[in-house]
Length: 542
Ligand code: HAS
Image (cartoon, rainbow, N blue to C red; front, side):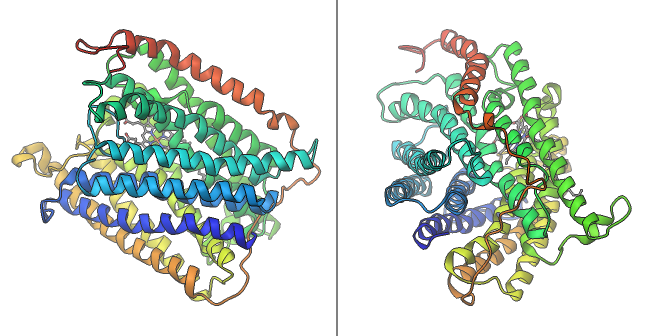
């Protein structure tokens, strides 16, 4: 990656890793409070800390890391950015950073304790919403850098499929752009006017629906960069090949189509939405599982083919041939492993009736700590182990590689305790997002306490792993010995296979995406606006 592009990427990573520190600290405080053995000092509120944790890790760390990673991936595979493209990227970075600081200050002042799912009826200071708007607008600018580079590459290489990593980054950018229209709409049309006192009330159903229109693709926006690393970088790191370039492209296109019209699976227990539409979106949710199953298949095929090429025999002999001592492989692999139960849990969540058992319990918190906070985050850490030194002109030393492995193992242990306990307590009915731990000595709550203590133990181990990760990051960014670290880009197993050009037909894919969204959302929106509760004024959006 060119030095000038590397600077832009590293700027994103600095913000992401500062977010890891702040958000991790907030997480530690939370598990300690939930254990019932600790109280927050100095009048700090539980929901204030919970909002810091969710916003800073779920929205800031992820967005900045992903934007930086995608810029690096495109610069590496489609070529160095032009000055104009890079300038747009820098403008986007600064807008996002200013927005982040504005939102963070409001949360720290306890003026925006509205959680990371900031929909109505909880209300924040208008500066918080303004800050979030800037983050979204800034991310569109960074996305523009990627889109411009892709267009330039296509013009220079007519009739050729774009490089796989660039293609993947572009799909994720498009999905993000379409999805963020929903959150921009609720913020600009509803939440900002409401927080400024221009309107007295808001239509809560519309606000939640617009949020989840964005909120579900948001989780795939987190996941797809991890899939980029799994499909393209991991094969190269282990010395193997990508199972199929076309299959990888196809799975990304399926994510573009099916990630968005599924938001209702977060609202299955909400009034105001006809069950038939909920059912439709549950069906679409099951369709979005398919590209993940394709990914699992493809990864198994890569691992097995590589192992057998090294002489492995028997059903699982190939496992022994994988480079377990290389943190660039092992840490993301722990993430893949976690994604198996994580995905199964997601399927439970989406199964309409079973959702009644788990909704709003701490099971859901357990689910997303396995998905985003293990599968995705460990992959991001695994990427940092080679990308940060690659960008700063340094080397991942043996010592750092060892520490990185320890970091990954600690994460696995901590998360097994924490997320395992969350899943179990959730099935016993323990609510999520609650500052209580004993519920005034209620008998049922007594059943949850051992699990809450296990969560605190797991959370504390995770915090140690975060400190270790920050130490490794600072080392790789500033102190590791100078040298060259490889940017691993895998090759497809079948070099003669050319990906069909239909995958690059964006009019087609975006057209189907928009049609699916209109199909899944138009009538439910009309219902929500028409049937707004008494007292709603104007167009019943407020
Ligand atoms: Fe989810 C709630 C359904 C995936 C994140 N989810 C959440 C929330 C978050 C979140 C943050 O239907 C909470 C939101 C809130 O605050 O209220 N989720 C699903 C489904 C999937 C899914 C069906 N979720 C994710 C991913 C996330 C994420 C990915 C973040 C990155 N989720 C739900 C539902 C709810 C929900 C409901 C609402 C619950 C409620 O009531 O509130 C699917 O996409 C999952 C498909 C995944 C698989 C796994 C494939 C496995 C792979 C690994 C292969 C491993 C290898 C290594 C090769 C089918 C690819 C193996 C080697 C060996 C040796 C074994």
